[in-house]
Amino acid sequence: QITLKESGPTLVKPTQTLTLTCTFSGFSLSTSGVGVGWIRQPPGKALEWLAIIYWDDDKRYSPSLKNRVTITKDTSKNQVVLTMTNMDPVDTATYYCAHSITIPAYMDVWGKGTTVTVSS
Amino acid sequence: DIQMTQSPSTLSASVGDRVTITCRASQSISSWLAWYQQKPGKAPKLLIYKASSLESGVPSRFSGSGSGTEFTLTISSLQPDDFATYYCQHYNDYSWTFGQGTKVEIK
Image (tube, rainbow over the protein chains, first blue to last red):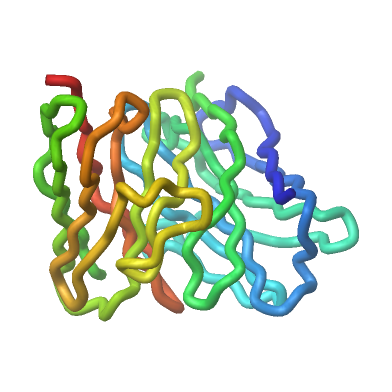
């Protein structure tokens, strides 16, 4: 059974850097074709795709956030880390990580999400 | 960037109704489209991938169709558990874009 769980701070101040960790089980990020992505959802708004990292360390980023977002993986720990710099109140959202087994990647299993509020 | 536009934004329907949601892409995306269901406070759930392939475990009353720029999600007979928000998503090797969502409400 594939599971993913997001963790990180619930509150960050404007201009700070956000670091979120996705800890997963039931699959390996060293298996060919596997990817883990990050998606966010501001309160009452639509989903927004942020980034994805693949088994071969290939990475893709949302063009609108490319300069602020970094995605990395630690295969031995079964973790994927998302960092987002220069946080702003508009970045307040629920952040989800999700699994993919296909290329191109659609997200077939999602974590429950973690809520991040940006406020001074 | 490819834009995804869903219609309607809100849909009021009754149990047993046939429901259709449309998703249009700003340019051709072949069949690289997924549909997700999201309930309040929950993560999205994959329903359909590659425009018309039903994800394992998803009831057969859900179906997807289309290619190119126009796609539809159909629920053949709406059930109480189906009242939720539905999102389409374009995916390819370098970009992923969600539609703005369609909320299916009880009439």
